[in-house]
Amino acid sequence: MLKYKMLAAVAVIAVMAAQGSAVAADGADPVIAKVGDAEIHQSELDFALTGLDPQLAQLPDEQKRAAALSGLIDVKLLAADAGKEGLQNDEDFKKRLAYLTDRELHNAYFKKHVVDGVTADEVKARYDAEIAKIPAQEEVKARHILVKTEDEAKAVIKDLDGGKDFAELAKEKSTDPNKSEGGDLGYFTKDRMVPEFSEAAFKLEKGKYTTAPVKTQFGFHVILLEDKRMQLAPPLDQVEPQVKQLVMRDKYIALLTKAKTEAGVDITDPALKKAYDEANKAEAATAN
Image 1: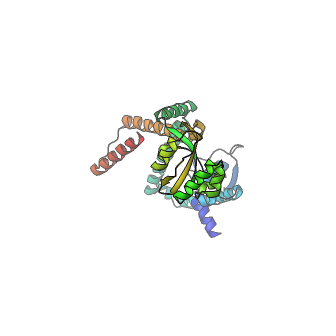
Image 2 (image 1 turned 90 degrees about the horizontal axis):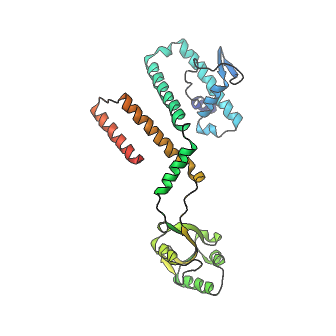
Image 3 (image 1 turned 90 degrees about the vertical axis):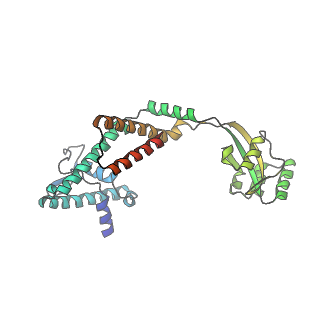
């Protein structure tokens, strides 16, 4: 129980000016508990829930709510005692509070202008631009049967010549882990396989199999080519989160660039300035 209480206490997000920023108690933000004269509103519990320790975040909903509320109550109790001692007037506390305020304002501005500012049209346009950069590549769909020796591979080819089904032979004789799928490798580009395998596979005609064993570092292969096509671009809905991240990154960089130009940044420590400039150059190179 002690461990649970400690986790609950550290799980709560720092209650940002909770004493002075409480939302009015109305139907949308009811009071859910009181600690002395201090009220705890639903909005505060919601904040606390977003900051739960990962161990507690796996709990059922009611247990998570209880853990968050436990932490909030602990915070209110000691915050009240801290106020009685005047710790809010401590200079170190004021500096930390100023930093936390700036950080949360940064986060709020980021959410408003970057996260919430991304439109579906922007994501689609960035998706189209990224897809246009990808060079067209041929890909093939193939199956294979992997065996240890050349003689075993030749025996497989003889069975195929006699009319046996490739997938069934793969299930019976292949040593590759995908034997249960009939040796199905799906679609792949030439660079996805070892050179000897790719060279043999891409030379085949659709529906044909290799008439001689193909040797690689893994053993001897018999390969069946099922299809050839130009590589398809992933659909937008499959990569939308990654594309949205790119759009948000660009928006964030644009906001920072504009803000730095307007405000100016002057770093007085020469060594720190050098490190800052180098870090920003490296970040810009990565972004491009």
